[in-house]
View (cartoon, rainbow, N blue to C red):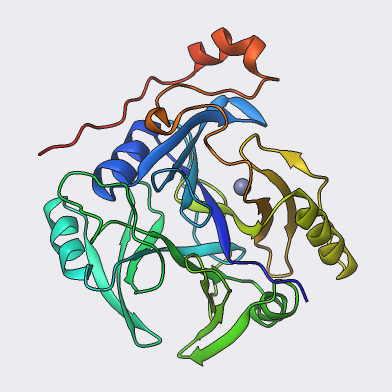
Length: 312
Ligand code: ZN
């Protein structure tokens, strides 16, 4: 039986890239680990955020468009993206969100408290506190490693067909069903982070792609060979899977599950250090070699952005 360790990355559509950077680095304290373009549409950015080196399970990526039309969160999408912080860090985050004028509510699910809020463009996020998962070495402002986001806690899937998606989580991705309560099913993958996946069973409204919605969720494959095993495994179970696509920092395959959510399986390797040293991650616009000949033209079309400095 094949088992994914959990989430590799989550990719979402948002509005202005500077607002996107300001929120994820300046409020949440993530590191912008890569500034590149959408490989399928090099006129737009693809921005990556994560821990110090962009460890799989910490990587949140965005396709920001200045003029993006708002989407609608609903079925066929990841409804809530969950970040995990150290066990005692929630009071710190209540204060920080308050100080940064981010409205939040406290929610309890499967006995765990979380802080739920939206980013600048309406994407639904939450912070949950757990012991599991290594502390992040990336710190920002007054966020020490005792409070910093460790990576994804998991995600809440808004499936158009919860029963089929639940079946897939267990029998295709190899996760363990660990709970069922108050309109949610909970599954656990084997990894330390990005490993707790909930399915909300009563989402009525259909999702519409646009700013403030998740585009896809990627699950972890160890390496290229393991990814080909996944491709075969998913195809054998009746899904249509894309050919392997070179995303420079990982290889990717995609398929749409029966609840209409776009799933990707991405390789842990080679990672984000292949074209920039660790201390310079995210500083320069990085292009894959096949877009490099058009650098000048691409750069001209992109809105200049900067990563905010720490306010000490
Ligand atoms: Zn992806």
